[in-house]
Length: 335
Image (cartoon, rainbow, N blue to C red; front, side, top):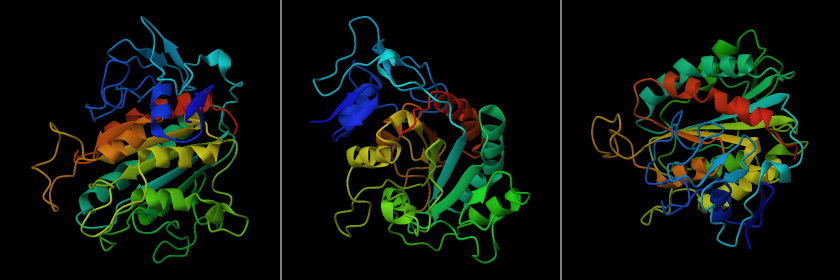
């Protein structure tokens, strides 16, 4: 059975994670309405203390639920917890940021927008969280490669510190980010952002001899930024796409932080339902494919937020959600 004990996932399944947030996967009256896919700043999951429109409950920075009115239906699978049930929060001293960038056609314009905001996003996190005593780790992977864009990849050259990821104190961070995020559009049309994300953080890559050893730190908040114009589902005719479903993805990623959803922040710039900023409906070349699976995955995390990948600039979204990073850091529970 899947459930939540004090804000922690126990067992498997997305339902328990959604119920922790006061969410109803069918858009009912028990929580957030998943029929509204754009979860930008000020929307459900974008910041702490957000109340859903039905009055089902509010979430604090730890992800615990405080019920109001008739209360939140736990469906028998999850406890309706208060912050008193949680272990003491120890504000994070570091942040690990992992960008997952679609490197297939036609993602050139989206990559340009991301590069134009990424440095300010990192700097804003740095200046907003007073408890940071460590560097922000910054990695970039693509939708067809789970290993980070390498330090010695031409023309990036070695990252400062000799690591396979960047650090926020680097004197060359602007150049490093510009290079690392210039992943191009020659990647596989079989985009698998969730497979790549979960494999990048699996035991093999994080092991002492793994490619990403040292990236994920016990006292650091994990922030994932996904940018893609296509949904991640298995296509019937080609079998392309990531294995599993949002339930499995949520649990697998949460396991990296001892099961604590509040220790992970996910921001996704993906295709949302109309009205959106796309110039037309998705046709495989223009616009963006509606991505309900990626959206459900994102919203399962207390500070998760969804933005429109078709927007002409990403600064409003990425800088607008930085307070959510700070709130998650303040409520950090060591795994």
